[in-house]
Image 1 (cartoon, helix red, strand yellow):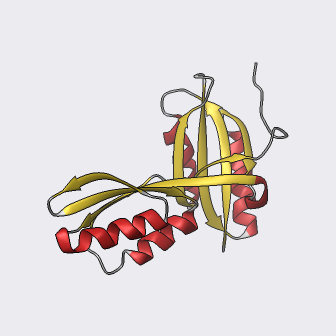
Image 2: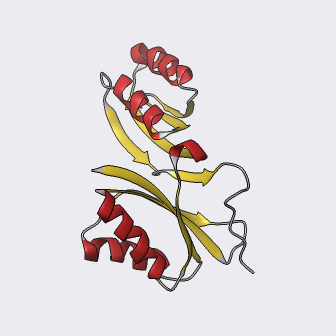
Image 3: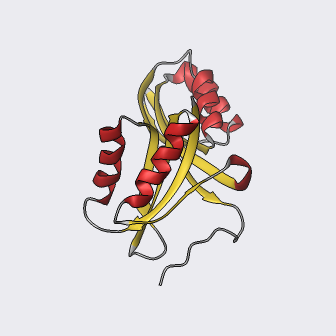
Amino acid sequence: MRKKVFQILVDNTPGVLSRISGLFSRRGYNIESISAGVTADPRFTRITIVASGDDDILEQIEKQVRKLVDVRDIRELKPEESVYRELAMIKVRADDNMRQNVIAVTNIFRGSIIDVAPDSLMIEITGNQGKVDAFLRLLHGYEILELARTGIAGLGRGTEHIVYID
């Protein structure tokens, strides 16, 4: 099993995300992560999906998604040719005694403290999936009260693979 990151450009129409995720569930394909948002052109939405499977399954995913009516373009975002980022928000139990340690770890990872309460801190961290995972491992000794992760968003480097649609 390996993972592949797909960038899908679709028409910004109601139900498009449901149709794409429905294709995955009908075929029994696994989605590791999915994120979607409108592009610079409001007619289109960019969806980034991380899928896992063997080479045949990953090839089938690309072929099946390409056939969907709303899909304008699908391509693999290869790690060496792309930039991936993920956002995580983590609420950690931290009283006065623990707070400085949590802040120090957050600063090492260039995270931000975005909310402070008497008994907790809320942290925002952005980076590749490995950075977010490493940060969470360092928080292992603390009680994580809540965690929200966006999933991967990504773009290809440079201007070679930009899709222009009239």
